[in-house]
Length: 200
Image 1: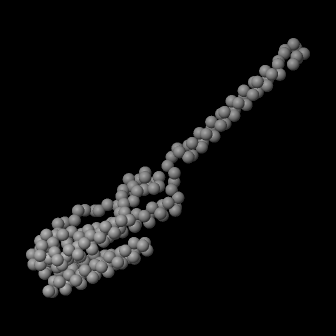
Image 2: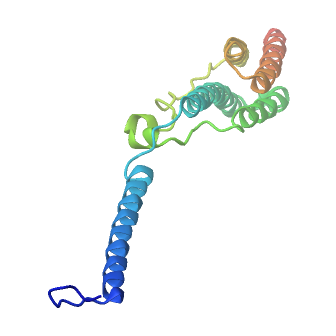
Image 3: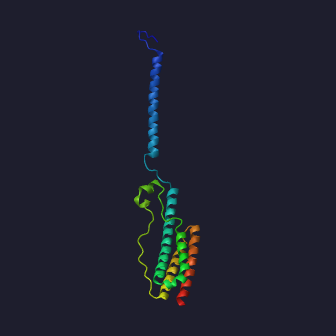
């Protein structure tokens, strides 16, 4: 194009300059959008939903329940072992019962007694990320010197464990509640057999 004052500019030059300006502007816009997307998706921890928080709360409640039940069963198993160590002559009466208690302890803990945090908020919180763990080591089991008294102690321990499993039914999920009910009934039967054995 030729202007009246003699200046000359090529149409191709104007078009090229315009294209460059558009490309620069488009690149800047794309970069800004990419930064915005990156910062919103990965710039900080994702806030957990109400459903995730509730699911984790339920899982922790169940894990704590399982831990209490397993701890009770293992404590009972330790008393059986201590009684057998103190009174080997009681083995014919106690071996089968001890085996049942060991099976109960294993079954009660099969669902797991710890929970790993699944939400970003729980992972960031030390108190929330801590697994459910036993509070303290149990004291050594003391066994009566008299065999009949030792059997009565075992019977009392069986009743306590059975009562604990029965009380846990109120808050246990359905499947675990059925297991607790079965273990509690077995414990009551053990207590009866041990009581009868103590009278013999």
